[in-house]
Image 1 (cartoon, rainbow, N blue to C red):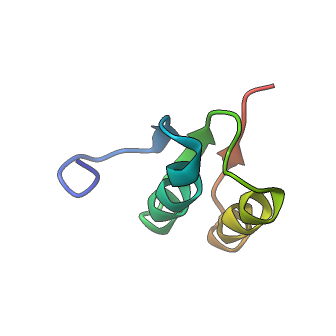
Image 2 (cartoon, one colour):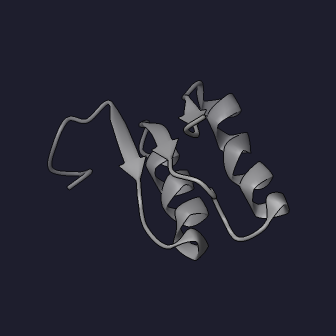
Image 3 (tube, one colour):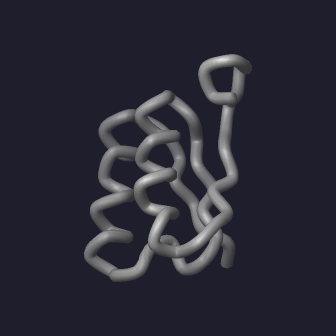
Length: 64
């Protein structure tokens, strides 16, 4: 779907063990990302999944 449509953002909703990988994949495609809580299975993985957003100028957000 990402390759077929012109998207600005993606909501990452799924199993916690998949969210970090999916979120980073969306960031790499140039999308802003909204990830449900918890964003991953560990805090280290959550932090590393947010790093590409800074370098790509994209938003990586979680619900409050």
